[in-house]
Image (tube, rainbow, N blue to C red; front, side):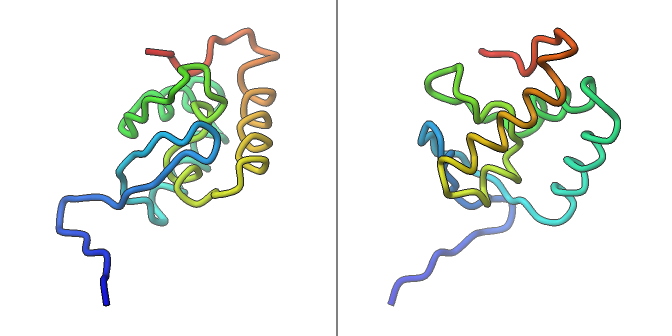
Length: 105
């Protein structure tokens, strides 16, 4: 029998349900709390969190998943639902404000 083992300091492999990029991370309650707090604070806080520590590089670079933090992408396996969540974040924080959104690198 095989088991996944996560060593201290390492994260678990996850995959963006939209573009399929694989990323590593550990996402618990504190990550979800930071995401909820960022949404309450507004566009600048959301942008900062999305450009921050996750370091997920989506392919293609305009993947809607760039509007979601790793803690959401790690839990959402359904492509359609992930696209809806990303669209909600885009429309709530970036479309009406004219903000550029997460930087595409």
